[in-house]
Image (cartoon, rainbow, N blue to C red):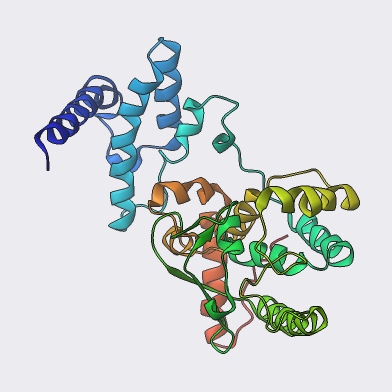
Length: 311
């Protein structure tokens, strides 16, 4: 590592350690680390800001605290990180990262119904977004060769941006995501429809891009949102959300179903699990998880047990 880079990292580490010793340890020093709660962390942030401390200082305090709890999660000592998502208290209200606005289950179903009825060309892409959590660029960059219908998975190999720039996915890694049966069947229907369209328009073969425009060319996000996505909300009478909130919708469904954060991280392609922590509060409570586990254990004996009913 270059000397200048080592010096920069050493200064950052020193500032973090100094901030911990001065602000965090005096507050939590008498507590076992596993006993520190989210309210404790939030109270620390609130007090420091109220004292006029800078947001950068508070970040230097919270970052190593959050890392400590991430390690405890990996070690199995705790289930959730009480310092997760604290960063939203340090962001400007105008920062789009500070809000997640997923569909409710009912909104999602209505949105897809309207898309299928009024924008059938784009319905498969929207269904894919809500069943896989892929980013827009990852969806636009899908080729037919990326699908395995027999084993029902998609290989996310690239991201396509407006203007035709092709890159690796955001974290620079290729990943696989599962296709639901509904999505696999819809994409198979789409492939058959593309073959008919190619024959009718004299294309010779179907476009390599799965989700393409009427000319068989890749979709540009700005054009797609203007011509279709925003119009669906007007047709449906729904509040407008961002395209990226379809990804948030999928992730919150995964969390609500009890999927571990590590699994959600892998599915979404997050480089760091701290990013995935924003979905932690959508996970079922410990009581709900216990009821599910008891119902499963009882079912092994042929007893109906207690069954968790979720809305």
